[in-house]
Every structure is written in structure tokens, then in C-alpha cells.
Length: 339
Image (cartoon, rainbow, N blue to C red; front, side, top):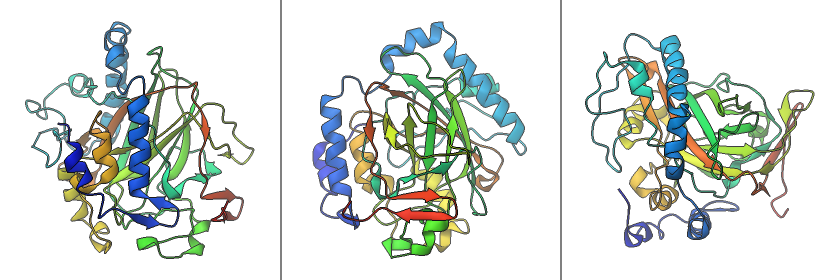
């Protein structure tokens, strides 16, 4: 499904400045400008080559191994219609007896997520780690990310991938703001739900995180950045802010609705923004599908979610991310607002 410019523009008046230095409308326009000049906005041209090289099957086996390790009872891959876009909860004919190789071979989300601004929450100096949960509470989320060179269609090995997202009540670690963008300088000392992993030989990286909550003006999403030349420091953090890709991926509204009914998500008093109200997601949906594929890892959503997403990156295009804060040993330091 693609959305008209008229529908998307209908939300512009309500989604304005949500944080000092963060304007959703401005970010949406930057993303649209990128899409207007991008050579490619998907990996469709890579399909035949990827199939011939067995990349889809390799990814299926990788995801199967994760599912077999983490699944509580049987996987639940049944499908329902989503409110906004087609469901990404596997396929209509799958059940708990479907071979996992078949289930995880699906790569329809193999798209180039549009380059975008990193928003007001990018932190330099994050830790290298697979598990970024720390002491946060919420629905376990295992992410399997696969990265390809959009020009050559080859997997990109040994490159650093960074993720960050808010917690169940809509708060980001490492920055000096809290819920509803209120000042919270004590938050600079926190590091939850942020981290780096290096891709393996197949261009894949995995993270253990939590399903994100919502916050004013934004639906549930996870940020991702690819760093082409990052160098780990002795304390196992990465400071470089040079990126080849910054993007966001999203979740089916039906899945988010289930999560939001659970504690501690249901304690979040910030206004809910659904997928069909999120300005940045709607711009993405004009040309691509930034919503993850997923399965539940048990008979309840609280048992956990395994989600996967593949995207292409132009590794020759780099820029410096706008750093909101930098984490050093002992705590973070906010970037001056006028910097």
C-alpha cells in the first residue's frame, strides 16, 4: 500500500516541533528530498543475484537457529490484517508446523530504508554489545539485521551497526530529556537500549533489545545507523559519528497494540501516535516498506518477538551524524544546543 501526498500532508499541522532541535515536519521533508534524488529505493534489482548465491536460504537458517534457541513452546506465525499496511506477521497459510526454513526465507522487507535525519537522540560513544537491555522491563525483542551494498548487491561484512530506541515508557537513554521532552540531565548517565554490533561474513548482526514504546508525535520505531570506518576504543565503545546510513524501522500496528496493553507500556501517559499518524513512516511508505517481518516466540506476545529486516546501503556516501550527547567513562555530556 502506498499513500497519497494529500493524506500524508493532512498530519503536517499536528506534528510540529516535538523537542528542541527536532521538527518532525522538517525531518519528513529532508527524507522526501532524499527519495526524490535517490538512484534506488529498494533491493529489487538484487533479487536474482541474491537467490543465485543462496543468501536468502542462509538468512533463513540463521533465523531458524535463533528461533529454536529462544522459542517458548511453538512459534505463532498466523496472520491478521494490519490497520495501516499489509501484515508482516509471516504468511496466511503458515501454522506451527510450517518448516522454519520456509518461514524465515521470506525477504519481502529487503528494501533500502531511506536515509534520514537521526533525530534528537543520537549518542556517540556507545558500547559494543549484543544485549542492550540492561535493567529495563518490557517485551523481549530479538533483531536480525542484514545489510547489503545497494550497488553490488553483496553482503557487507565487518561493518559496525548501531541501534537505539526508547524504553517502554517513551524515554531515551543518554540524552538530557525525559518523557514528553521534559529536562532530565540525570538521564545522561544512562545507556540502556543502545549499542553496536559488527556484521558477520553474511552481512548480518543481531541484537537483544526490548520492543520500543511510543512518545509524543512518534509511533514505535527503532533507529539504525551503519558506520563504515569505525574503530573500537579500549573500553569497547565506538566514538566515530561518520555514517553511511541512518534510518528507522517500524512494526505492525496490531502488534504494537498488543504490546501497549501490557505493563510497563500501559503506564506511559504520553499521547499515542499510531502508524497512520506518524509523519516519517508515511513518507517512507510512499516508496518502500520499512516495517519488520516478525514471529512471536511463544503463545503470548510477552514471551518475545523475533523480527528481521534487510536493507541496502550506499557505502560510498558518508556524512557526520548530529550528536546529541557523547558518552564517556562515568557519564554522558550533552552537545551544546547552539553547536
